[in-house]
Length: 418
Image (cartoon, rainbow, N blue to C red; front, side, top):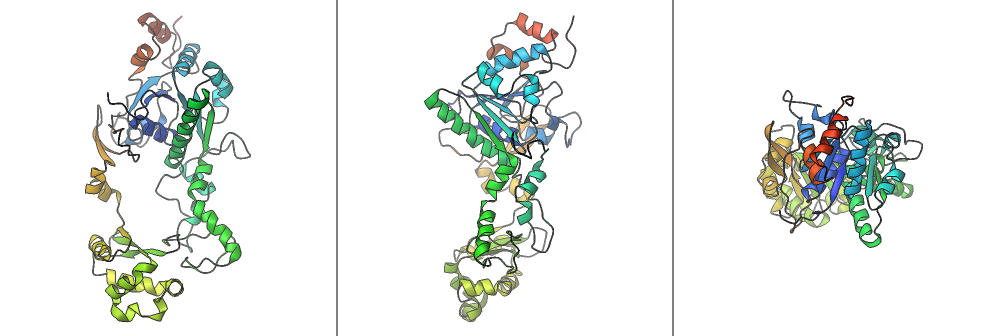
């Protein structure tokens, strides 16, 4: 097997749904041996949003590639023995249970580090393990609401909106990935593991950094780059404003479908050429748009003129026109566009995977590109598919020990045989 960036790292992944599995899948893409430890009933997303009867859902298969599955009953004494032995053999333990759940099983951080002082225990929760919100339940949209994203998303005169990008779940997953990598790197120097934690609310706040920038700028006057100029004492919903020093907006194109738009950023240095292209010398010298400050004051009219010009073009054709004069722009691509896009396929960001029961499905590829660690995507495991294999190859159990554990209920919901 080709040596990968994370070859030799073994991850015991107890996480479920999206935030944790998105992190461990990235680790698996980069070569880690990810052992997905599931209860006998399996990760809840195996059955959520099923599109085929009695087959793992796309919700599960798209978040759990490059992993092995073992079922362990942590309510069973024999199951706890297996879990403790796995902790001894792993570099990383990942969990996203509610506060106190692992402690009730007898495996909080204090117990885990006694079993394996070198292990990195990684936890992802809605609001972290302490603080007034620690006991609250969180989902993607709850994290977006409480982390500042919803209040700043949508049109200024409309309701707060969630973003389709899963910044609470998968956004937390990529943050957790970074925290785990840092802890493993520190372990190389110290020989010690440590506890790392990412809270979904914290991660959303980090992704909203520029909104906290704007919140503080309001103390010194209005925000000139926004298309609105009436502000309260918080960062407003920005609509399609660029959020930076340059003006930006989505311009409607023909034939007028739901996603027939081109997003355009009007940089200071490109305005003369852009103005001449859409309105000739007259527009290029128009005092209403002569510099960035003038365009900010008159941006509603500027966007109207751009949309009038765009009405004769399809989004890709308009992109070609604007690219000729170095205007930053990009068409609004929907999921149908992207899943078969030539660039996306070339970048291996849409990858076809063969699942033993589902057949072929398309997964989002690995966004982390390493020249010496090529990514090979393997299908998500069936429930408990690798239980015997892990018992033998990782823990070194012989057939008699596996039989004893199986009869004792370590891997199933059934009561132990007496």
